[in-house]
Structure formats: structure tokens, C-alpha cells
Length: 160
Image 1 (cartoon, rainbow, N blue to C red):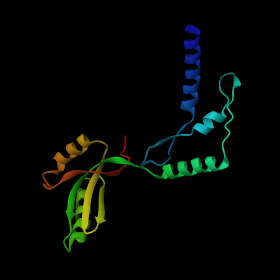
Image 2 (cartoon, rainbow, N blue to C red; image 1 turned 90 degrees about the vertical axis):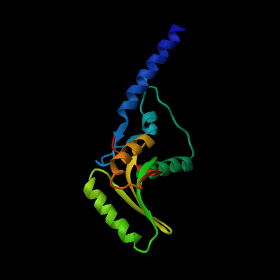
Image 3 (cartoon, rainbow, N blue to C red; image 1 turned 180 degrees about the horizontal axis):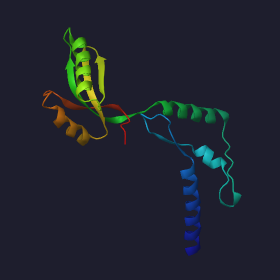
Image 4 (cartoon, helix red, strand yellow; image 1 turned 90 degrees about the horizontal axis):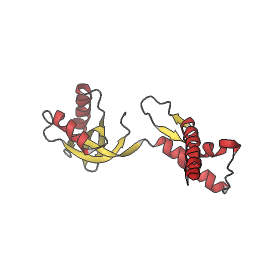
């Protein structure tokens, strides 16, 4: 039993060493996302020069490659934003544009997003992973925007 545990520990150590070597970080400074390519890890010889040959149909390899390209361009996740404006009046478009500029001038580190979903123009701010983070920022902006409230939306990856 001790030999089996020792062998598993050695294999895991070799795997983890290979895992950390194949991590690459996106060069985009605004989005820090870590990608891991398991296929390049499999292609490398392991401990004692052991190799793994992966047999898969060409269409499957192509589908995986297409999905990887699509995922590299998708930097969104489920999260929360603070909605500071939602209206459908005739001048709502101009109001929302002015509100975005005003908000970004006052809070330059927090991004404002303007959207239109018929018949409403909306302004949401921030990229918060959790409802608690959104509520904490809501307390900051509640004085200036008393009708603000948190909403669940797709958000951009916030900086870590």
C-alpha cells in the first residue's frame, strides 16, 4: 500500500510540474486570464520519457480548436452591476449618455455601461463577482443615485 501511495505522489509531482510549465498568461494588460492547453501537456514526454498518443477524429480536434478560439475572445462571466438609470422617456437616450459621462468623471476606476432594451435605455456600472461586492459599492453611490439597485448581468472579468 505504501508503494502505491509513493508512486501516486511521484506521478502527481511530475504532473504538477508539467502543469505549471504550460500555463500562459494573456498579453492583454486590461484582462489577466490564464489559459491551459492540455494537448501540449499530453504531447510532452513525462517522467521516464513516457508519452501519450491521442487518437481522435480530425473533426473533433477542429471543433476543440474552434471552441478554444471562441473562449479566448469571451471575457465574460455571470455577476452583478449597479443599475443607476432605467427610463423610456423621449429624452432617455440623451440622459443616459450624459449620465455615463458624469459617472465616469466622478468614478474613473469604475466602468459604466449603457444599454437599450426596447423601450428602455439603461445605465449599469461596475463589474462585481458577488452580490456582496455590488451592495458595498451600492452604498457608495446610493447618496448620489438614490434609485440605484443591483442587477444580475454578464460582466467583464474584473481585475483580480
